[in-house]
Image (tube, rainbow, N blue to C red; front, side, top):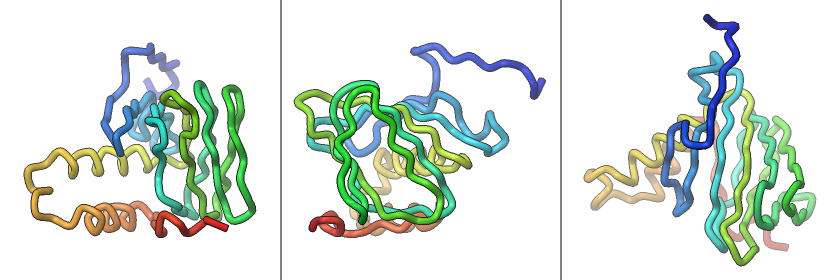
Length: 159
């Protein structure tokens, strides 16, 4: 039934290896008719995505563990355990980096869903034998564009 309450324990959900981190899709867009997805992200020390934008997605991050520096064109925010960062729809360029001495853990809610499928495609690409000899950056760029994202150079937000 569509109106049933859904529960997910800490062992359930689809587990992915993305950008050296362990991601777990707790609730996928397929389970919410595309309305939202919830993704747990374990981000290695010093890791995080390149600056990017996605005008059709809203992201809300809740920091479960560690310290993560969020950057946007309007500045930096040090998000520590218990902090929430909201990236509204509209295409603000942003990124984050784990600056703590331990893996950081984030809970990311994305509305509407879609980034969950993006992460699945990226992991599939990285694990495929076809990735040998391919330009991985170019392939990730194409997948990003498919999901309405624009990727920028790693130093795009450096002031």
